[in-house]
Length: 212
Image 1 (spheres, one colour):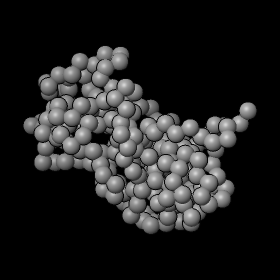
Image 2 (cartoon, rainbow, N blue to C red; image 1 turned 180 degrees about the vertical axis):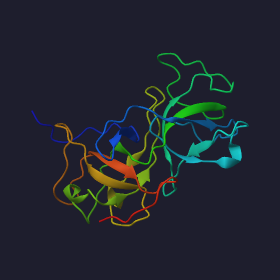
Image 3 (cartoon, one colour; image 1 turned 120 degrees about the vertical axis):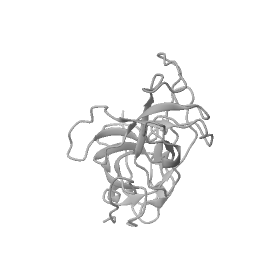
């Protein structure tokens, strides 16, 4: 029986495929999180910004978590067991840790390819300007949420109320994720916490573009 609405488990931005439709193979690059970074823990799917003042001694770029409106380069995929240059070791097991704890020097694996599309769930807030069926081609802002220390997933979502043509917004909406349990509304103010495929629009490694 079809669902009346979607569930709303926030998971941040999860790499799904490349812009040309080819599969994302899970690859990424290693980045560094300095022990001095104590603003927040970092979770799988959290958007990240580079922070060159904290780069490690081997030239590995340091990262902080992004904030709404900031140019980000990608997202966290996982933590790295011990790190390649003997950072403060974190033993990785099947279950723990599932995220990067704040105040700990460690390396993390990040998806930083500007061609990757991410699956992200909208927050269900009202949008009086555009029906969800008209969102593809528009841009939107990301909003933070609390990460899950059990699953390790991010709490970030797409702010449905911000969908617009403004070129400086965080992400460009490419399409709704095409699966049976992902419903979208066809009139304004009928957002259903749907999952959208987006590309980073406000990207440290690529140019911004206006919505259409």
